[in-house]
Amino acid sequence: MKKRILAAGLSAALLLSLAACSAPRGSGASNQPSDSRVLSLSDDEMTLDGQPLTQGGAGAVTLSHDIVYYHDNTSEDYGEGTQADMHTQEEADAHTVVTIREAGTYRVSGTLSAGQLAVDLGEEAKRDRSAVVTLVLDGLDITCTVAPAVIFYNVYECDEAWVAYDEGETEAYSVLPAGVDTSAAGANVVLADGSVNRVSGSYVARIYREGTTKKLHKYDGAFYSRMSINVDGEEAGTGSLTITAENEGLDSELHLTINGGQIDIQAQNDGINTNEDNVSVTTVNGGTLHINAGLGEEGDGIDSNGHIVINGGTVCSMASDRSPDGGLDADGEILINGGNVVALGVRNDAVSADSKQLYMELSFGSLLSAGAQVELEGTSLSLVLEKGAQSILYSGPELGEDVSYTLKVDGAVQQYTGHASGGFPGGGPAGNFQPPDSQEPPEGAFRPPEEEPPAPPEGGGEPPQMPEGQQPPELPDGQDRPQPPQGAPGQFPGGEEEDPSADFTLTGDVRSFSGIAGQE
Image 1 (spheres, rainbow, N blue to C red):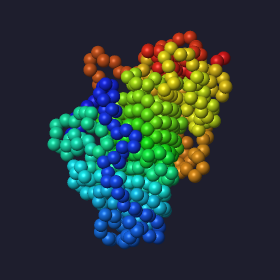
Image 2 (cartoon, rainbow, N blue to C red):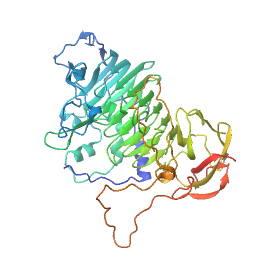
Image 3 (spheres, one colour):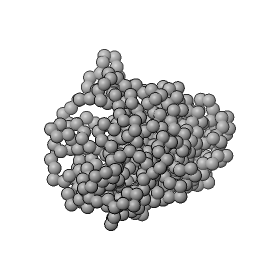
Image 4 (spheres, rainbow, N blue to C red):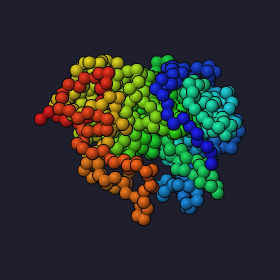
């Protein structure tokens, strides 16, 4: 079993240093050769630089039907997938796998209705600084129903400290400034100016290495990278990418940096996920990012098992309104240093008070319905909710300290009963959250089985119960078992309960407001 002696946390000062190392907008492919190869996809004929590609051929790009997917008719020794995750051999064989096997820049266009675009430079690529591939998407439309539609398997991993640790060459791994400078990453995606690109993909549930329960394959995102990845636009930043995901949208197993372009993600589960515990950093430096996540049973907008840093760009991130998820969710720190950010969910994780840009966290006493109009007078926050939300995070350059703002919902002035410094832990409990009675997914979206998740009891319910016949572990002498939060919906751990007020004023001590409801 691989050791995981990781840094348990990350100081705000250090994380700010990490953010400064991330590549600026437009630099995602700066270390790539200026010339590019032209890869054209279609259901009838594939070409590279105008020359046809054939099944079984060798060279820089190969074609096959060899796709990694979760097989049906397998036992519990095969993996952790359920019946819903399984696919037949016939389903898999219907897909054409286009695999890039040589480093370089590839301008990719065309429509592939059943296939996968893969990048695999070999097992040794992670340590090879020249093992870099840039995909310039210039009118790509690709669909895969058994696995990710686009996947980077093996390229250079710019986080060399992590590579050494991952291969067992060090006793410990700690996050250092060099650890999130992704400008040299082997996985790069550039959205060509004026292009419209569409990626519709599935996922692969966890498959075991034979004879063990260790992971052989597990790819949750429709657009997936096993290595750190950069996403950028060309000079004008007018290229667009729409990801439609049967599970998660855009995933990286280590770091993800978004520098530019226009990205729209529609996901059944998390919209973005970076998944190395206490290590991964999701960084947004520029571009426009619109995420509608949790179209199924659950899902966060941006979910990092490490940290989230937003330095610029425009971010609108929506989570599920069927479960206690957030537009921003991180196990580590969330820092907002610039840009315009709106995060919507039942709960949002707390933003670090060490963020360079002011932010306001708004927690409502009950779920706002889809279609509600929310306006924070004196700012650019004015939106009609696409889906229900109970927690709204807003950050923009026009926010100021000691300025009184008025919050309106459907024209009615709102007031709050509690506030806290630096955000509520975990975004605050969704104490009286009730999922909407009926909310249809958008037209054309994957529809989950028609089975509504059970609504939690009013007031947050009882603490989870141990399985029958089991008892919770003993605690040390003199230590009391923690109890769930009590009190009115507007009360949060660390917050202050006070008389209702309609003056939403950010100060050096106050960033978060709770128990929000219309004035009586």
